[in-house]
Image (cartoon, rainbow, N blue to C red; front, top):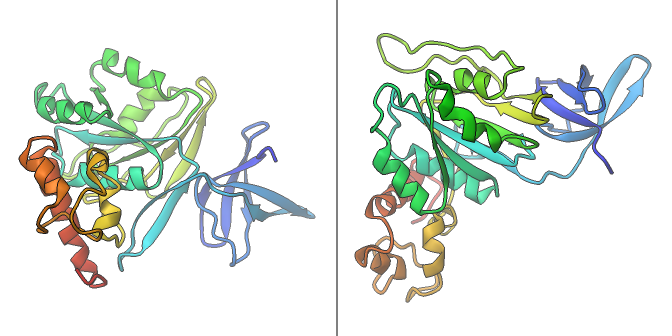
Length: 296
């Protein structure tokens, strides 16, 4: 079945749906047993002048975050890649990049790292960018004040569905307005007192840029991105450089934190795994205890 309609945003009982034949938007209803999210492909039925979602087509993947109880909360579906945008100001909170990468890797979404506002301090992300490039991630250094810095990034957006994610105030909307010229997304300034960004996107919403035949999903900015309840074995799956060492530990249920003859701990000692990335893995595992649902 060739999808004809795609969810652009949802409310409690209604959703905005894009007709993929002409890219027009209409409001539709859905029953309480259906839970459509932004990016879903759906089929519709018509009753007089009202349209209703009949079926949500199978999802290729989802992007998620934790709700207040540590449960997995779906934000968007059918995503080709996620732009994880960080900035010189506000500075990234500790581990937020790796949290986003874990979410992307576990949900089978290609992550792309974008370090923005480099005009403020050009060398701020030099070492960080090098670390992630060595791991095989695509990394871009951008500034909305320097148009030439977005040329190469723009090339990877064509014919793709791209989700924008990052902390409030990192310049997601300003950057996307350059990357997707036909769109006009709201922008905001950093709060003077806190230095944190204002929330200019209140709901996850999908847009279509006809000039690039590309979809953009803009998600609300956050101050800290929270992962849902995961075990150490699951979190390991979000660290791609750990994969070659899995299965070589003494214990099959190794948490890679303290056990003897752990292949990952040894790889860190041998310089085969970056020490800072490993310590981030440990902190992310420790943070799961916040949800009070784990027994490790």
